[in-house]
Every structure is written in structure tokens, then in C-alpha cells.
Length: 451
Image 1 (cartoon, one colour):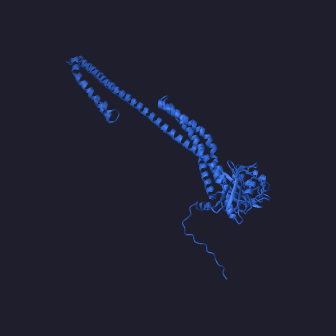
Image 2 (tube, rainbow, N blue to C red):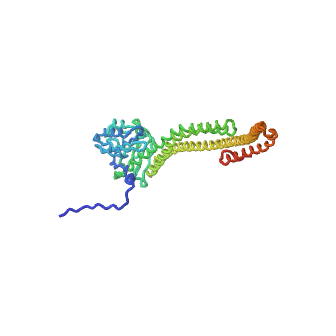
Image 3 (cartoon, rainbow, N blue to C red):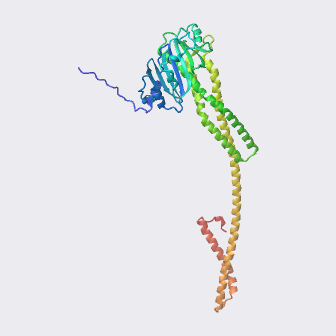
């Protein structure tokens, strides 16, 4: 009996674009984790300026059973490692790297406890977390528990879990499939705590999506706020530059300084603004992008009110919106000031150009006057030249006539010289005119100089 053969489907499409597979796989690059509740999700996002992948690789190899982790595993942007008792996700982004640890919730850390010590039962150890290469921007202890959220009975032990501190709380989803509570504070261990509660029967994939949205929302919120210190640093510089531009404009209007001096000062001011733009533009653009992502993640939570409690969205918007508005104002003031400097420079350049044209016109007039004077001098020299040549020719004729009279030729030298004088003058004049005409035809002299 013959074995059945498997026939691969024939490909009849044109050749793929080189980026097709990569772009197609981007939709699956960072899938949501599957989380079995109750669970502890330890999340650390570090800025990796100056941190090479090799350093991150060496750190990941320190995890249990990962000593032989190949370097090729970090060629992409996402990696999931299975660990004894849990798993860890590594994600490298443009400005930061995220480490997310998933493990069962330690005993005694559920509802009813007060500020439970979550770090005491980490499957990777505190030392490993403390040695993550980079600078920490976000650190979150997310605890996910089962509880009945159809009533308010869970709120009291949940507040006790936060030590009675003020919290923001929201139902999530149109059907209120889960609830989340946080105080948005950094604890003594440097972590922010979030408590997510969902009823029994919540699927592992839904729990993974809940954690992903909460963690990304907080990450993008803090990444967006990186533009705020830059904006506060820039605004005094912009105010000083605005005053300088106003003073320059007033001096320009009153003509209190030379145009070249004002133009030099404007060029220096424009250079300062260009440097500031190069230094801060990326950070401001990044703030807008991260804030957009945060708003998207917040919208995906589909928050609903919980008996008059302040929601996460309300808490964030009242603090995030002014910060982003400050960044936007600084960006717009910088761009507006640069445009005003450009307009002032254009006006000043126009005035300089007009003054330069007037100077050029005066120079041309002087050149024309000089040329006219040169023509008159040339005509005078030409007349003197004709007289001089005539004098020498007539002298030669006189000497010739005297020599002829001395040889016995009956001729009066003075009469002969006087008789030939008009002829010589005419001949010299004609010869000079002929030379000028030939030079004019060759383009060696101006035709207007003839005559």
C-alpha cells in the first residue's frame, strides 16, 4: 500500500515585497500574555540609553535555566522566557526596555492583607531585579485576584490592601467584567501598586489583556511626561529670546543701529532657536505620540463609575492634561518665535538689499561719469595726437624740401611745407579714423569712441 503524498499549495502570487513578512508579523509581535489568576505581575521599564543588547543578554542569562540563551534570541524586539514557576517577557522599544515577570501570587497577599510584602517571594530574586541594566522609569507590582465585583463587599478589603490610602477605582468594560484600583504612589521599595479584581471564571487571555492595557497605560503616561521638564527648561529661554527679538525690532524700526549689526544679532538669535529646536523637538513630538497612546489605552479600559468613586481616567486627566498642554505650549512658542525671527530677518535683509541697490546705483552713476570724462579725455588726446603726427610729418616734408633746394631743385621749402599742411592733417585724421574703425569691428574698442 502506497503512502499518501502531501502536495504543497502552488504559489501563484507575484514576488513578495521584502518587508511584507515583517510588516505582517508586526500584528503578532507582542501578544497579550495568558495569566492564571491569582497572579503577581512584576513590571519594570527602564530607559536603555547607552545600554547594548549584549548587556541585556548577559542579564537575561542570569535567570534560572537561561545560561545558554543564544544571542540571536534578542535580534527581534520581543522575547518570552519560561521559568520555573512562571515566565518573563522582554520587550525592547525605541527609548525603553520592558521586563514583565508573571508568577503565582505569594501566600497571604490577597484581599484582607495590608501592604503585603510582594517582593519576598519573587521567583527571580530581588538581586536580579535590582541589577536590570538601565534607568528605571516605571516599576509596578500588579496583583490580579478573583472576587465578586457585583457588590461593593470587595471595596473595604481592597482599600485595606492599600493600607487605607486614597485610591482611584474603576469598573472596566461595558459589562463591568473587572475592576482596578491604585493609589498612583511609589512605595518605599520604588514600586507602584495596582490591584485588578475579576470574578471567578475570567479567562486567562482576558486577564492578560487587562494587565497589558494597565501596564502600557502607565508606561506611556510617564514617557509622555518626560517632555515636561524639558518644556519648563525651555520656556524661560523662549521668554528671554522673545524680549531680545522685541528689542531688536524696536531698534530696527528706530534705526538706532546699522543694518549689518542688527542682522548679525538676528542671525545669532536664529542660531539659538535652531539649537533649541534640535534639542527639544524630538522630546516634544514624543510627548504627543506617547500621550496619544496613553489616551488609546485608557479608552480601551472602557471605564465606568463605581458609586461616585474617582476613576483612573479622571485622576490621570486632571494631572496629565496640564502637563501635556505645557509641553504643547512650549513647542508652539518655540515654533512661533522661530517664524517671527525669520520674518524679521527677511525684513532686515530687504532693507539691506534696497540700501545695497542704492549704493550700486550710485556706483554705476559714478562709473558712467568717469566713462564720459574718459571719452572727453580720449577725444582731447586724439586731437593732440593728430596735431603731433601732423607736426612730425610736416617737419619731414620741410627737411626734404630743404634738402631738395640745396641740391638745386627750384623749390621754396616753407611754401612747400605750408602747401602740404592741409593734406597731411587730412591724411593723419583719415588714418586715425580707419584704425579706430578696424578696432571697433574686432570689438577692441567701443564704437561710440569714434569721431
